[in-house]
Image 1 (cartoon, one colour):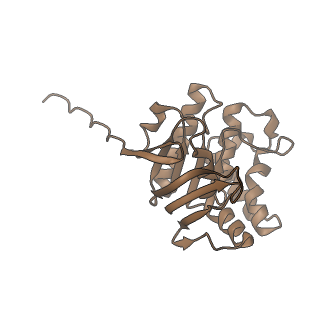
Image 2 (cartoon, helix red, strand yellow):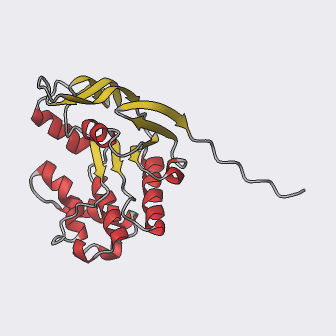
Length: 237
């Protein structure tokens, strides 16, 4: 994923025009796990909306998987978003009256237009991978907060996306559940080479990412790689 001089303004051409993103340059490589930090109102959510093809930049270029997106029509953007990008939000956005299995199947149903046995098998595999095979047939509203977020992660992976966007996915969870969800995202990143853009206010979690980008007032003001973990000491002798 590559952004080149991406700007985003609202109320363009009007007296109340305001620019929220100012010439963002950003590249996310395959298999990279990158944290995005910054104060509230700094433009992080606007940036994620543009990267996730939920909104269009006012100017600049955005490429995903080598495909330049800013000139695609809405139908093409929808297809690319559905097949290449997974989303995990601070609130899980599950459908409470549907089971965990049905929620995970939703992206596949939206893409194909009709259910199939393969979709159910894929959804069961994903729920097993997040430790919830025993909760497949439970309604989402009956799951704990940590379980709901793990279902949301499984749903985000249903289409095998190249990029996973996580917007404060641990913000509403207790420390233990937050750690479980973070490690789940990390495992997916390492085993499937899925690139992850992880928005967080938690510096401890950011340090566990490959790189941290700091956004302030709509501009990237810093980017730093996280230090590699120290190797374990060898036993004496």
